[in-house]
Figure 1 (cartoon, one colour):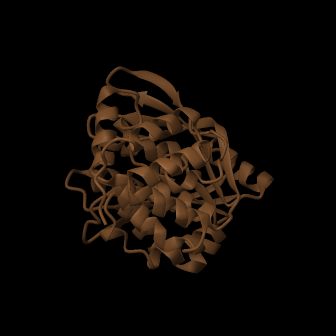
Figure 2 (cartoon, rainbow, N blue to C red; figure 1 turned 60 degrees about the vertical axis):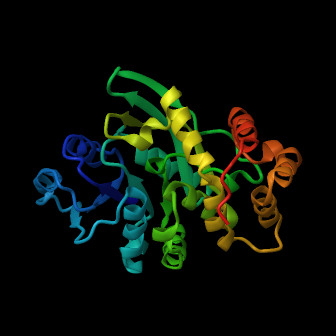
Length: 306
């Protein structure tokens, strides 16, 4: 089982060595890491240089920053030559500040093979560095018919996919102007691409990543159950977050499809949005609890960006 891990780095000197070691210490797989540093201003590169003599590690320092991790991962996929992609069985995303359990990649690859799926994701072990508390972040809810329209699968750091899937993803990313897509999420985009193109997705109810929450991890904090997370999510949504996602994703669905109708009605006005919620309700989110939250939030005054 040969695997390529794409690690997006930016000012990660404090944590990246621990993560690199946890990836290189994966059991029962042949594994390479390609690090894409997004113009770090700390000593991330100096830390990574410790791995220069490791034939399984390549370090790529960008000449110009992409601006965020989502762009970094997406640009990384586009930069991979097709023959390189085809030389691996699977490709995986990695964040710079997590810690992988030794069997993460073997278990992901095994499930992908058994289920003959194209994309894999899993639950996570959330580690709040400040309190040292650990808890399971459940992402293994069963799929619903239209769940990809309003949410992604799991954190991108749990994603593993086949080489064929990667080739298709690379092609569609080349035709996607995600730099102009406000609130673009590579996690969501990958899941959307998989579902809208009929790929089989494997969802693991186990957790093989210690997902570190720390002072500089603003996105990670949004995955916590806290007043801060609720306030921040509401801020995004009230500023038209869903409508901006609808605008971006609509380019990848058939105009006369049910999915297109759902998007159109959700974004049109309050009453058509209410119709969508009542008509499709629990088909829109994998988690019942999250679906109820989505229902309530969607009835708030929202900023619609045409």
